[in-house]
Image (tube, rainbow, N blue to C red; front, top):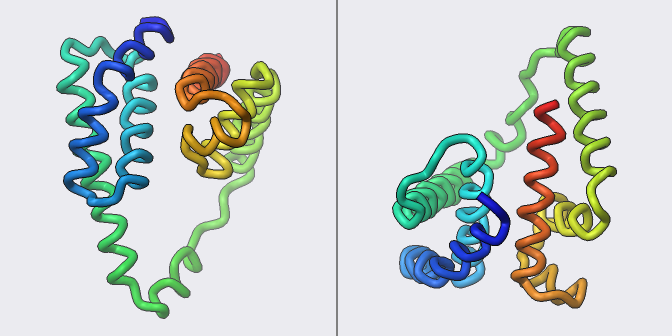
Amino acid sequence: MSGSDLKALYLAHRGEILDYLDRRLRCKETAADLTQDTFIRLSEQMGRTPIENFRAYLFSAARNLFIDHTRRQEHRKGESLDEQDNVGTEHQTPTLEQAAIANQQLATLNGVIQNMPAPCREVFLLVRVEGLTYVQIGERLGISPKTAYSRMVRALDLLSAGMAQ
């Protein structure tokens, strides 16, 4: 499936996914973020297995993202300060082999990101590092949110292909 097919699916179903999430979350910003994540999941899944009913897949992914978001929110509310202080203090030191593998994967990832076309790399980093939405990226870069989304889809395709080598 091409980027234009993904764009058509986005244009056809974004509104109803956004409405679905907004009704449950009662927060337009979070609903918009989870809507973006829904389409990112779709783009990541399309290369792996065939999807027979895209609309059903989108609603299922949106529902799962909503559940994950709700669980994270409940978990954050339930943590005490003592629990937060102890998180991650008991971990194992990686073996030399694990460290070498992780360093190689990190080098490969960095190489793939650096070799992306500049517009794709810029949007990818703004989404994944700075956590911006496509609307925020559009405002910052002077492009439409749809263009930002398309560049992110392309960046994820390049990342997937580069890491598979």
